[in-house]
Length: 139
Image 1 (cartoon, helix red, strand yellow):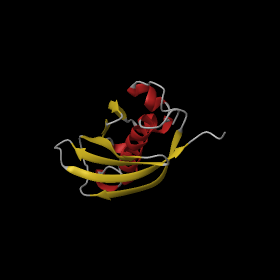
Image 2: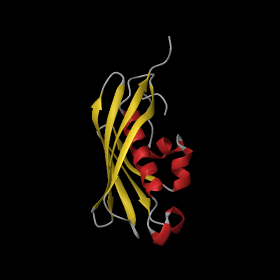
Image 3: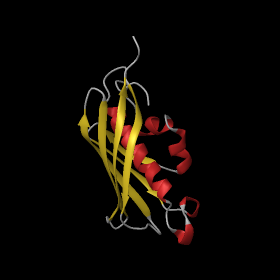
């Protein structure tokens, strides 16, 4: 991600991560206190039996968390995921997944983000907690 002091629209933030566009992710809200987005079900995002692939869900959660961390960076810093843990609770076989990421901790060296993924019926699909490094420029 780029310098946290820069103002970006939701579309600009996704453009910083081309993989998110390739997966079809959409950002709806991008604020330091909350980032929300949507990932639609489609056959190319599935594993066996038409179930949305866990890797697609994890990539979606990671993207929302990275945007949240980016929006909480000090001026001049960048970020990178250093740890991510996802629990899966139910399969997604149709519709879409909506994700919400909120910062739990914004410190000098790390930012911890909590991301919930919910299906179209608002049922919890997955929960991700990730730690992002705050990388300051070398002086």
